[in-house]
Amino acid sequence: MPKAADHNPSGTHPKRRKTGTAMKTPTRTEKVHEALRQAIIEQQLSPGARLPEDMIGDSFGTSRTIAREALLRLSVEGLVDLMPNRGAFVANPTLDEGRDIFVVRRGLERMVVLQLAGNLNATQITELRRMLDDEEMAGARDEREAIRLAGEFHLRLAEMTGNKLLVRYLTETVSRCSLVLTIYGRPHSVDCGIDEHRQIIEALIAGQGDKAADLMDHHIEQVAGRALLESRKPKSVQDVLSSYASRLSQG
Image 1 (cartoon, rainbow, N blue to C red):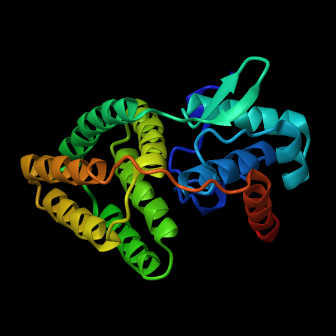
Image 2 (spheres, one colour):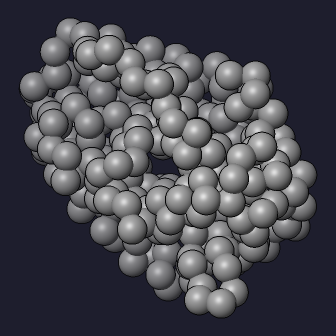
């Protein structure tokens, strides 16, 4: 089984990742893994949906071996359940499990902002503000894209701490929170989340660690509060995979 450190911790497409070193060309496995991950995070693949290796291979024009490796990576992240003699399924956490996940996330997010308060450099501040602008523009045209960018914001904050273990745990936790919201989430205003992100950034810039932690606590509490006992109509797995395979070919 691959190590979690092998994953792209940002939650973004590998080609969009910006670092200070030369950009590594993602492998076919990484591309399929990321496409499937986004299909789940963007709430296109329903919790409990079966993910046959042959269907994934056919959709992305790749082998079952690559499909299996991508599914293994997703299982490490907590996004996919691998069932012996049954195959792979999108993870389907219960509401009680969801509550536990959000409790863990609040603790991790608090650690992130306490480490970053007063320690952001000019480049990082510019990047975070640009991410907010992107999130705001996405909110006006595509709520799913805005939700994805909101997740990227939290993971990028974690990356800025330089703590790889914290990044790993938060990546898995944010992914699982997204699943909970997929199952139990209710419609909400994207603008609310953007405003909360903006307040957190300003507290970090001002070096107000306790304030930033309190703001983050409130923000995660609001996100968790969007979870209700609602079900959503599942989409065809093959149709979703075809859509994300098309994105890969265009990239």
